[in-house]
Image 1 (cartoon, rainbow, N blue to C red):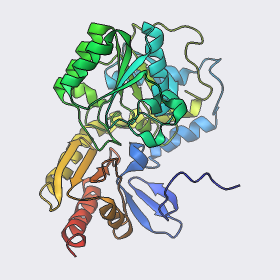
Image 2 (cartoon, rainbow, N blue to C red; image 1 turned 120 degrees about the horizontal axis):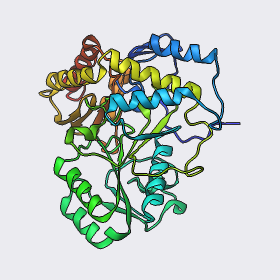
Image 3 (cartoon, rainbow, N blue to C red; image 1 turned 90 degrees about the vertical axis):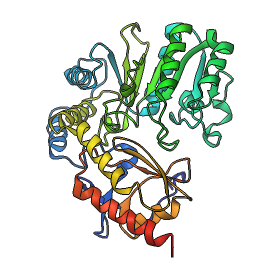
Image 4 (cartoon, one colour; image 1 turned 180 degrees about the vertical axis):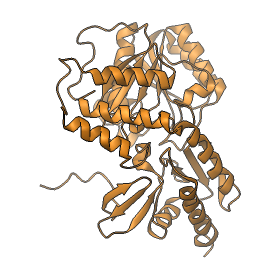
Length: 382
């Protein structure tokens, strides 16, 4: 049997990782400035994280959600305290797409409405409803398409108001990323987010903040939307939540009523997933990683902002989009193969996406900064 060939692969086979570095099967070292799509939040193989998982493996690694699991309670309490959403409830699942699926479904259960408003440039996942609110026709199959899903332009307040005037009584929820990641690190304006919140309250729609990539300290706030003082009805998270262990979560306002069987999952919130997630929160708190994300992100931006061929830098914390005056693919390849540094791209072909671990050190950021100076100063001009 062969693998179903859906990913374009670099010819690199990582076999070891520590902190912000990877090593391939040939012994070559790479700086990880992408974290596998913002998944590696506290660095590869953090010793506290490793020990938490090892200790849990020696006890119990899995049982279903038909029994008590005190680790889920501990995780919910610590997540509430660190995020500032202590009065919300937590539903645990396995991924960002699954979190968004459950959020959309819960909103529809809550108000009995069926339409969903989403935005241009969005990415919310590849599963049924999540892909229907993702702005990429290439990955939306005919079975996923429905007129219930309405697209509005990003940061366009006027179109937002017109869409609600036309469909407001049928809109169940609005789903928006705290910061668009795949879309190219697109940051919502405070006015845009405030207007969404206002219209949701006016028409009885649910505001879903997708913080799958922009959450967990990535933006310099626990959740990116918290910078703007907007309170979401439902928040979805994943990626950095487990530092590589598959886990997702839905944070749910107390106004939503739970009932047996309303939501469900086999693997969500299993013992290992909870151990991994608790370890991440402990490290984030003890090592002040949200503050480090702010400081290191600002340092990187200040060091590179005047480099040639950079048109703009879109950044919150360590969620960084470097907009170039050309396609970034060759720059990215040069960073990878000439300087052994992993970076990312986006749907905007000119944007180089930077998502290092939240505990990245200054000397490690300097490796990237110096390499980018060489690539932009020499490679492009030669």
